[in-house]
Image 1 (spheres, helix red, strand yellow):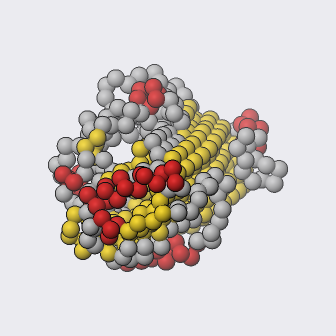
Image 2: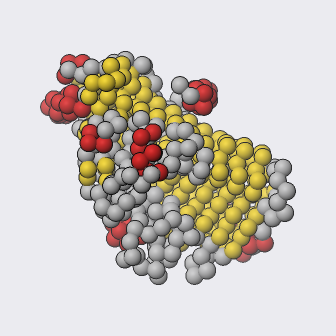
Image 3: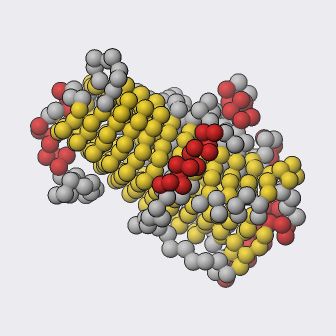
Length: 447
């Protein structure tokens, strides 16, 4: 096991406090339980168990109206291709249980692209189905005694880098159009692309998980809430090749047409690391909108960018009413970034006049050490970024850069910020809109 992963697991165990999430789904215990062994599975790391998982879950569907059921995965290495979950199901991974994603692409189904993206995110056309899937489910749980889901993504990363794939890479776990989803107390490793992708979902609670992919893994992402609402992510440790957590909501004209925002999101007590992307990212696919996000008690370290907002002409949509507070950063190249020319377009059918809106963003109570650049805010001339509110921020650096802040087409207000921000972020006319987002005690509150 890589040293970096061992350190991640140790740090994750250290921050677990068994906190409660206000959005936590109410899920009853399951009155029925079966073991994957009962369906002929072999945990030797070599035998393909896709049929065993499919048959077990098909059998457990019969208990949906009887209180639901649990599929128990004992210690062992359980090789499988992609399979689907069902409603009122708990997938329980015992300590020492490892679900392994097959490295044979024929064991991963090919499916249509998501409607809010119009095509695969990496290649035109279809995409590989994720390893573990839920579609239009209600009340589904993936949990355990720190069991593991390992996507064995190395071969996928090599295919991606060599442009050998015909379809967009699969994710590790994906829920589509589902509600009351819980993922907890497991470790996810080496996803081909995303690790957990709830899209078009409601009432999602992700807590007490560790997620890891090595620094060189291309565009691997930890958790991606996408056109979903009532999402809570807490007490997690995530270390990724690209973004640790990225909020999204669809791509250009397809996301605009689908019209479902990511909204009412709470992220707290998480430890994030990103080698080539951002510890916490918004966009750049945000055409359905991102609204009402609270982020608290972050530990960000050894990352290219700490917190980044991404968008582009043609996206449309909005990112607004985001409050991020109580953050500690260490060894981060750029602490804050907001970019108006990020990413690409799915095709040539996008509307160049669909201008995104980025406004009412509050960053407060933040300390950073060994920061190279404080902020890089590059807005859009036709749609400047507005109401960027900075408060009680102290960033220390050993850098020789003379301009710790870069700003264009942006406006906002700041107080008690060091190093001193650019003049565009010292606009007193913006201060009233900043303070309206705060409680009297200075804590964040989305109105």
